[in-house]
View 1 (cartoon, helix red, strand yellow):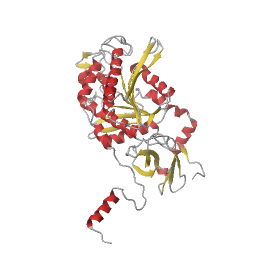
View 2: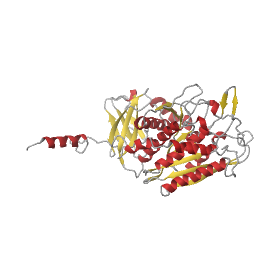
View 3: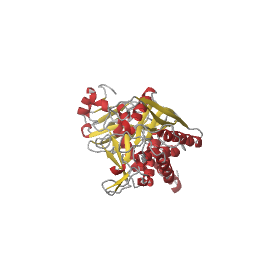
Length: 465
């Protein structure tokens, strides 16, 4: 048989690009979703400026402020957000379900809500084409405050805290409603954050009652400041706060015993979601460094992802690296040469656009990917090789296969992974001793989008093949 140079080159290209597989080696999906490069850079600086300016223009958005005025107070602000989501929905042919979710907070003289108050959230859901009940959520806070947490009358612009996060959520909706994904995305404005995280508590309860398959919550609280109280100016980094595991797990003796002997102290679902944000940021953005912070939130403080963690859902906080405390929770004033107050001029909108892009690629990636495995098991005690076994998720989103991950126990990120086809539910790491590494499994779709990693939660039963 005569082999020409052209036919030889053709054969080589087929092998390189996976169109022939003479040794039946599993072919992994593509390593990137090209849409996410566009999504990462799609946020409009001017639109963010417009939306933050509009929110500041309501004078105050304090939870206890006016709810009937059309121009001032939290009532006017949340109605504007509701209308804005509907305008976005109109542009995509009605692709958003927009509604108010409310809960009555009973007055308590010892709390920051002294009289019975309706705390109202604004929710917009972009339903998935194949798994509509599987939802990934982005949230910003509607409300603002000044020095006195009970002052709902005086001006409280709340430009960075947290009109920036709310504007970012609206802008992510504008970007992602141009696409369709197998899973759903919820864009949410939460109220009552400054009074005690009441909006998050109410929505978390609503999510449980309505049996959402909530993959996680990206809480965006202050994404627009680049000059900190420490004097550092930096627009190239941001922080990701995450808890190591669910708070209730600390009271579960079985889980405590498992963590003590088999690991998982830093590998709960919220921590895996944080790692996912870190990985996608490094892959799809430029000049932006994610900083993992192994804490629920800032030292001694809290945010609106916490109620979701308390309810058993993954949740993280995405925010600026350098805070300026003279611009948070402050009466508007000049004192000792310091210009106090959370004013519009302190927001850096190009930076807010970068962090909006981060949220957008994470929402898109998780909405496009199949859900993670519901159960991962591990074995390999006193053996030369570690073994993983897992269950397939229930989903209509096509699964190309799974990635089995491992890293040294001191590594903050997953460093190695291997592809396993969809018809296999186990993998053995030959000559990789289980003692020295942590392991996990993620699901991957045909377009290359992965779920976040699931850490093993139990041992493989003896005698299991």
